Every structure is written in structure tokens, then in C-alpha cells.
Length: 83
Image (cartoon, one colour):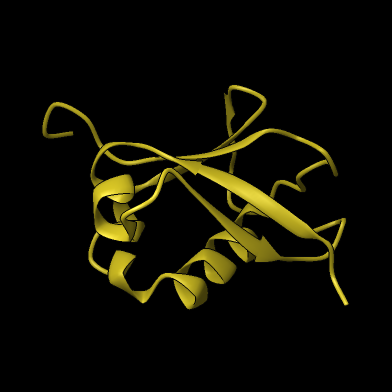
């Protein structure tokens, strides 16, 4: 069983899910892309917004193949100001 990672949600993502965070189970060496896939499975209501969102770890944007360190603070950032 994989450990739970908590992802903070902002703006439209928070509104779509109806809460300010979401927990998903992913491996300790999960990539940003794998975490986004876990988010999509856990919150299908984000399907329209998720492709435009970026995943952030410890206040740095992640590339899809970048591994996320265990214990990193994660956030899902939707586009802002129309971009």
C-alpha cells in the first residue's frame, strides 16, 4: 500500500472538489505525472480543469517526469487570469 500524499487545492480546483485539499495514495518515488493521474482518479470532477493545472512541490513547478520527494508540500495550481 502506498502512502497518502495531500495536495492543496486552489481556486477552480478547490471549487470543483468542494474542499481545500485532496489525499491520494502514490509511491514514494512517484512522478508529477503519476500524482496527477492519481488526482484524476480520485476527483473525476477535475477532468475538464486538470489538463490546464500545474503541480507544485515545495513552491516549485514540476515537470511531468520529475520525481516528487516524500514529504514535499504539494499543491495543484489551476490557470489564473485566463492563462
